[in-house]
Amino acid sequence: MVLFTAMDFPKKNNILFDDRLNYGEDSEFFLKSLAYAQHICVLDIPLYKVNYNEQSAVHHANCSMVTAYKKSIYKIQQNFFDRYDLSSDKILNNALNIYILNQLLIILTHETLAEKNGNVIREIHEIKQLANTEPFKHAVSESYIYEMSSITRVVFQMLKMKFYSGVWVAVRARQTQNKLGSDNK
Image 1 (tube, helix red, strand yellow):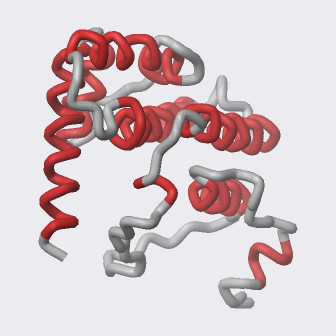
Image 2 (spheres, one colour; image 1 turned 45 degrees about the vertical axis):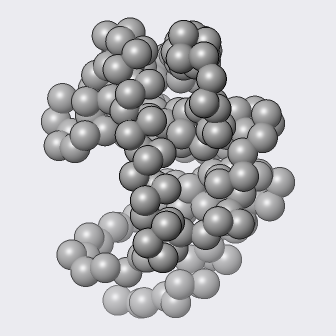
């Protein structure tokens, strides 16, 4: 058996980090790598640590965040559609839909409802509008979330039920949690 270093695999498969993507570029690289993997090993040890960085792009949202995330999502979809028949692979198709829903939550948390202390009705309407645009609309309707075991599943269920005021409450709670976490550092 031949073992490769972490850098051999991307080079061998011509997998490049797409620096044209402003958001989701790390996910795009990871999922593209996963698509080329012949074997996957799951380790139950922490190998990846997330550091909260106030200067991170995701924490400085602007009106292009939705467009930039959609660009990343479409690139990921293209990578998968080029390699797999997603219509016949329900598990992979669902994983892609769950990924898209997670990106929607990031957008809602860091842009759509970021630093707005205004009109709740308008903010709920913005959630509804975004959830009903592609690719989010498809992911909401087609995702199978019932085996998920987290609070995120509850938020996804509220999206499926079109309970946008509940999504608003959940996103605001997440923002408070994020702020408390950053204040303690």
